[in-house]
Image 1: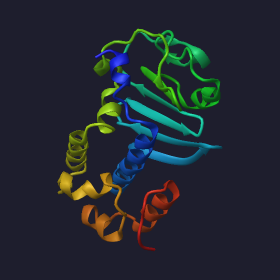
Image 2: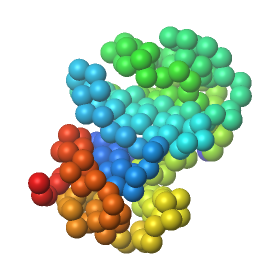
Image 3: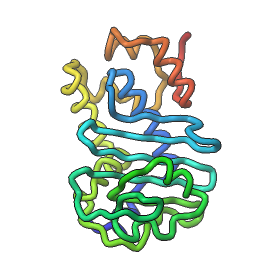
Length: 212
């Protein structure tokens, strides 16, 4: 699948924002040192979602009132070269980037194998670069986690195996449904989790929470 075909499947920023909060809470509840992190007020008027897999791959999404920017980096990809702001990416990948995103991209991104941006009325756009197949640019996890419900189940199964915990996708379905975080739900997944800290983070990032 080429980028023009892929980009029409990417969820709108509102979906990415909601899913980003949920994925952040799941990773934190399970005690993941890497994974998703949602940062409210990353810069003035900006929220940020990042994800690292611990193997050198990452993606990030900047949310602003004027629009949204998303990037993916697949560390095994070759053929990148310094472009706008000195970012290592495909030639032309950032051509056409709206000026209001310049400072965000310059601060956040050092290397990217996929760069896309969204503005009201225009949807997702990208620069005039020739990209390889979508699996090769590392976009799969961003696309699938935010479009395909089955991939959320697979992600939950991977987390259970990674942390040697006994739960099924059904046990964490409440997270993806953005149902309230409670001490009971947290304890059911990881009894030793710091409930007070998780509740504090949930309130800070805007994930629903019940309890002290």
